[in-house]
Length: 360
Image 1 (cartoon, rainbow, N blue to C red):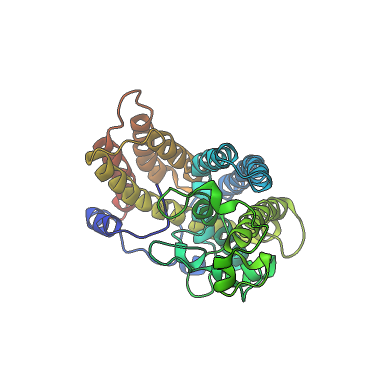
Image 2: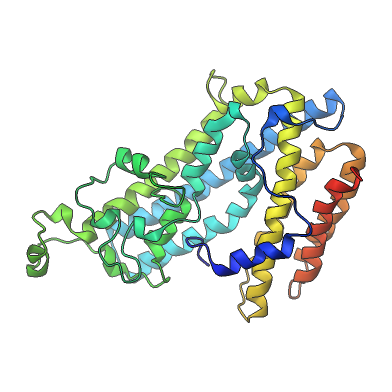
């Protein structure tokens, strides 16, 4: 369930795609020679992609605000009920987050002119994360920002500490909030968020001098601030998506020429499909081991469906090879019975292979 740690399973999955994926390389748009396609088609595709992505962002803002409301209620009145409500709201947001797959992949592979897009995406969806960077983890009972009373819990602190040591040193985003709500083993208790109103003898012995320094109170402050900043960051993304200001994403996107857009989107599509093969392989192994999760099929369906607008950036012949494979993958996810992982894997692999057939 959790995205915090890179596991041995994930590493083993790399071997499953050795025959079908090229080595992932950082995209440098100016060096890419994109296949030919009419300017009119590319202009229309670019506008549609941007507009459709804007609708996805607006949908996410609604869900993020619901999560923020649930977290505020939980902090105000910590109980088993309010804790479960906040966790339920997080799961619902994570479920629709699969609609965001193409947008996040575009951000990860953004050209130099759109580096702010990648930075903002990292604030929203940093994963995997190092749980011990935030709070107690496993046998490390006093680790993380919660227990580091030398660091005030402020927007500036969270911003400066986010990615401070490496990409897994995350203080912000959906998956940092997941850890704070669920804990490292999924067994977080609501009592961790009950306000400390008086220093206990044990806390005094440990050196705490102020109520604001106690783990419970810092944990409450941290979770509430993380939620507030998630709302603010999503709203900032939405604002930049529509703004005509010089340094905002919308303006920079439309300053890219069509060849740059095509190269960026088409290569992001190929890389996204390759990443999906890893995802499918991991989920298949978990299913083979008896683990069941009713969200797998709809989540995978949403991810694949989110990629469809990118097909418009492919030349006709290439699109005719990739699109049928994606349609087969969507059909596999739409099965009313148990998802057929082998069929899904082969469909996505076929889509990846299609990118190379025209070069042979």
